Image (cartoon, rainbow, N blue to C red; front, side):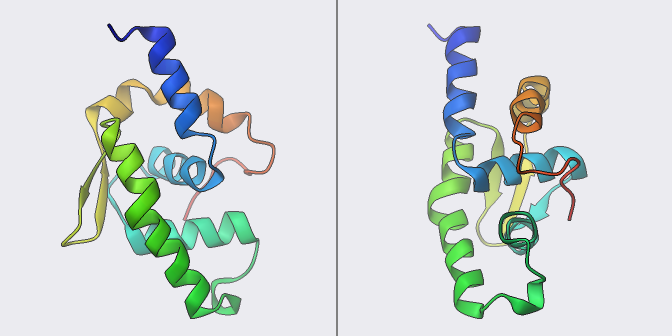
Length: 119
């Protein structure tokens, strides 16, 4: 049986990776569906602290590949997002909305992210 402690442990595990924390923070801040390109830009902005024009195409593509194959599927497996691969669109779910307070507490504890994380 999945209880609140298990749910919180799962959220902590999901938030271990800074890219996923950025994804969750941006989705929470924007309160709308975002493209993989939007999320890539947010990661570059907040993780690399570099203007987009200074990031190599290879580095940008690497982030997109990680989003597509690692980070988004992990969030989708926990029903926090729905991912439309054809449209490259990531949409927060009702589960995401319900867990927003816990997610916000975890994300707010990240000393590296400057709240609010926005595009």
